[in-house]
Length: 484
Image (cartoon, rainbow, N blue to C red):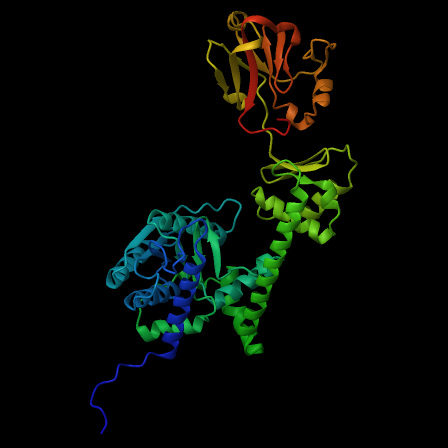
């Protein structure tokens, strides 16, 4: 006799697959641990506190599906889903933006998920609208997640997004790193950004939302094919799929392989960079070791090194030109290349990056009244006065007249050594190994019309003596100089 008990409804295979994908991605991230955080398994195998699980929620179809999946996993008491936080970024770029906030608030109230709304101002200077909005969005998402103690941030990017990004980067001529864009995980400061739906096609997300009857908003800009991503989505990818059945899965495999290749290249670049930097001052490269690498590895090292100085992108031709200048110029040749806000220079077999120099004021005047240090913002440094020194200036003589900080005018002579004749500053700087490009940052200290101290060289030996209280001068720049 058949049982009269009602059987629980069987979950749609698609729903089960999406729930499993989100659960697996989050648990893998928890096991790995966010950068710089304490999440992850303890020695006993139990997971430490992870705070809230933040979910980027635009109100669109994809993020609506992701938030609904996370709530269902919370109901199933899946590890990591107990405390959810939805974060909506208001870009202010569409007339409907305020209505979207209201929609997100109503949906989150229905799911009993707290919602944080962040308003951003999109700065488009020097960038396209999509890139500018993306940068502002990620900054706002990360800020909200940190503020609420989250260590993981989920976004609803899927396989079609990944394919679109690949095509955009390909059209821009990107290398393996760019072509492999949208990795399943990446560090976002101390957060870990996780994309649990990255292997899911858009059509499956659309079907899930329809099965669940979920409300969502639709951004009208998504239909504007003047935007490259929309043109690829609506015109190019459908044509490719029609011409080659299974194109999406094949492309996903290629993108995954590119990601693996990019990871290998990063490891190679890091290893070569460490070898080229060994024995050099912090942040600098030894050109003799760089020259021993093949041209391709040289380019990798230089790009990796520039990234460490905040230069994320540099055209391939510009990179090659910089390498040529650095490695083939005469040993005594000066190299100056502007890269963003940096100056790239050679000095005694080293390659170094420095913030671009600003013009130095011709004159700054101070009156010493016995304090241990006087800040001179115009020269971006501090003039220090060490009292009680065995050798130095007479303090009363130093205090009775104003002191002036001046730049070099040319032809100045100076005598820092008591047993040697005076020499030109140029000669003294050369003997002290002070790079020419740093000399303009070193002030000359004058008392009336007498040069009494030169930063980097010291005092005039004829004006210092021993016996009685003495004051020793020193100059401390705000940013360290190569000669220090």
